[in-house]
Image (tube, rainbow, N blue to C red; front, side):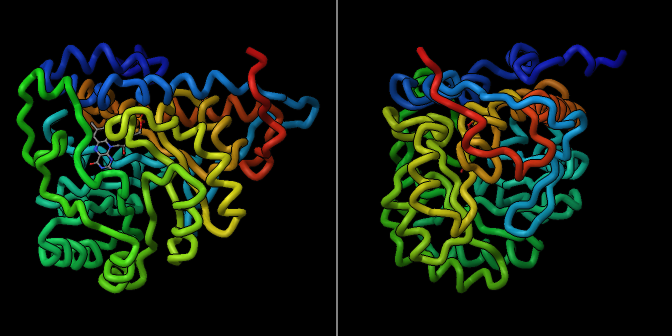
Length: 342
Ligand SMILES: Cc1cc2nc3c(=O)[nH]c(=O)nc-3n(C[C@H](O)[C@H](O)[C@H](O)COP(=O)(O)O)c2cc1C
């Protein structure tokens, strides 16, 4: 029995993180925008689907591995970008990068950490995507993108749902001060970004994939496909931007139908269980991302905590696949779920 064995589910990290963190930063991690309706909706959405498990298929030890944009991963979960990891734990982003390597998955690195870009890039062999916010001064972003290319990142993941900061009342009440102001209307980033800017980003990052994070409608998904984007992340930013947005899981089928298999569609928001991953894949996601469980785990236990959280999610997903009769990720199909009767 090690200290980490007391964490049986990823939710077990939450109280430990609350203890470890200053109250204002814990609230920053936990909170959402406005009335936090979307934040709560991200969890409720999973309750609206039930499984149609199949049996006698010899699915005892499923193969959880898959690939995203040609990169093999051990199971269909990526580390979502989340900001200011050094404020959660002194080990910061490099610890998450090493945990992602141990777990055999991709880390999406938050744009707010550009000060540590090279340190994170070299911290582990995990494949990494650079989550991009575009600075109002495009020359600043061009210099960052050059470092992203030099640092060996394999994709740029442009977060589109951040034209301005969401209204995070918890942070306003606590008076939280962050290294980069991201939770109010006064932000560093370009509020005028448009579809035309994608070719500029692409041109600056030859050989890297371009992923859009934050798409919630069929209309924008079609524009993304037309713009030659390589993948979409259906996301409402963990309920931190426009309150009243649908859960990622709710918007997922609309986007999957519009895209019609032309590019991979990923989803995030409220993933806390292996069964959540299974439902998202059944509804057409190629993979999911998760943020808060990994933030709690880093705050509570540093790198070892993030490793344990990723292990829990992997093992739960493997168990759910076996119990649902899926031997491989490609066997997770739409007929595995149906709307819950109530
Ligand atoms: C503390 C925190 C910081 C975040 N920072 C970023 C960020 O810098 N860039 C970004 O695109 N998304 C950011 N997100 C959103 C996550 O990438 C992700 O979309 C969302 O949190 C997923 O929901 P979950 O936390 O329920 O897993 C952040 C989320 C949290 C909780």
